[in-house]
View 1 (cartoon, rainbow, N blue to C red):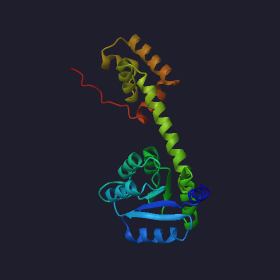
View 2: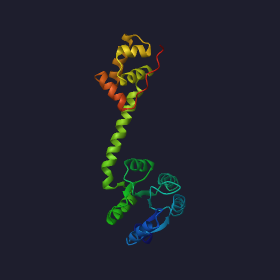
View 3: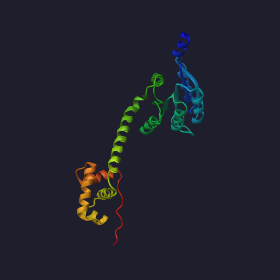
View 4: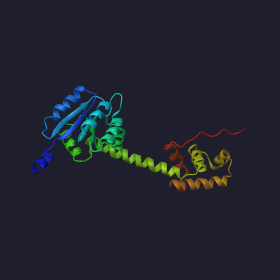
Length: 232
């Protein structure tokens, strides 16, 4: 029993490398093999082969490139998550795009690293990933926060627009074109008094204080439509 416990405790972190660049993969393998607590159990040059290796070895950590020919890194990630739920997947990529970062994290990656990080950082990141932590390259943390904030703001804007009735959406589209209440009434074949009520409702629902703000809001969120053709 004591010998079994010791073996379990000293078991190295098993790693699979998936990257289509042979020289880069060779360099990473050489670096990680210097660590006594790491074991490179498999590697692959594409997503399909990478999934096979992950399923075969059920590693503790997969280092996965984002942009590969054929199956993308995100598709590969999703299938590894499906077949190897206990495996931590660390994206290792050249992409510093915030959308790629959030897309990978949403797909199940436990971390996102840039290929220009130093060796010590990569080693620590792998150990943290194996311990169940989330690891994001320092250069990407600010972009992650900004992306999440932007997503929240967009979600709030869409939610606010969803509260408008179809007629109120017609009204705000007219406001975006700079139409007066009289012009809106003529465009939509409504009484001017009815238009005033709709405008008030739009301002209230969107928490705006003027029709100018409503017009700007509509333009910023792409809620414009061309004026309908009027009969002569």
